[in-house]
Length: 431
Image 1 (tube, rainbow, N blue to C red):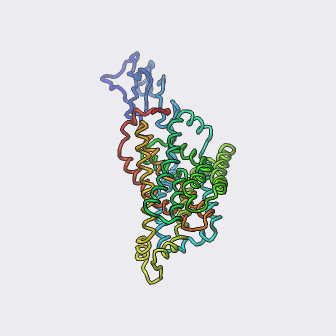
Image 2: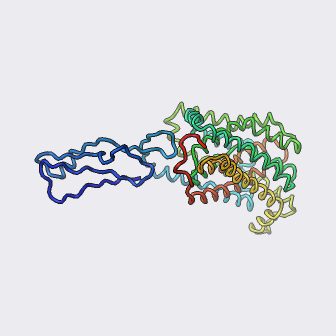
């Protein structure tokens, strides 16, 4: 935003006792409001015996300053945020390319699975460690005092987002697995994916889509903390008839790799703010790279098994393109269809339900994205740690690619469509 100063033009040289016209501050930015009588913002008084330029330079008397309101914050007055260094902008831009990293890694996993063998051979310990570090990075950015304050101000939209997350996606995953007739292992993997909390990538997509970013962040945090109980027991209820599900062990693992790192990160953030301030610019890029590595490694681990199930051959005489075509034409294609349907239903039903309940357009977009995008990394870790069949991890691994392509496409589509009622949307929770 920029402020433009305008001096009234002189028609003749000023006299010694003449009062110089006032400087008027005008603005074109809709987010800046001024106190009453904006023409009295700055008064310049002439001094005897001084040239006009010296009067303007030395005798300016500021009387009031403009009030700048935060767009998405809750503070009525907010200081102007200084520009970020170029290297921080570079890191933020690199982190926003998460879908590209996953797509490239997925393609490499298809044509040359051995690329990720160094990481796969150390699993599932390497998977759990990677997810723990991702959650630690998330915890470094959280301040529980701000979360509690925001929750008290906007309880309705936050509770609605959490309830939608743990009802729409689990029920949709169960229904899709039945309709498509997936095998028991793939059905459990799809249901486990549907029972996972919202992923941190949803916050980036919400920002792109011009949605309610604070709402997205706090819903992600709340559903992630609630995953300790809800993810294991919803999986037990919906998938327990297909394969044995140990809800207690799933809960303990979720506590270890999700909640504990988040709480540790939040403690470090409050105890060592100077250190966290240095590290924070690097955490988003680290998190997206670790997520990409985790998803693509699990996918590469199971690609040969998927290929054998459909009867294709990964012999060396086939070109990489033919290998990819052979794999996608079999059961992997069905898995990709099931995962795509699951995320589509999440985006669509999340938006429609928020619309029916009367939320404003920015909140509708945030809830839609939050419901449709899952923490596929958690699904991968739980699947590889607690289920004997490696096929259970395939739907979460495929989701890392499909979900980010769909979510990013939706975000860019909404970016170029202004929220219809964003100007009148309330700053506190209100329908």
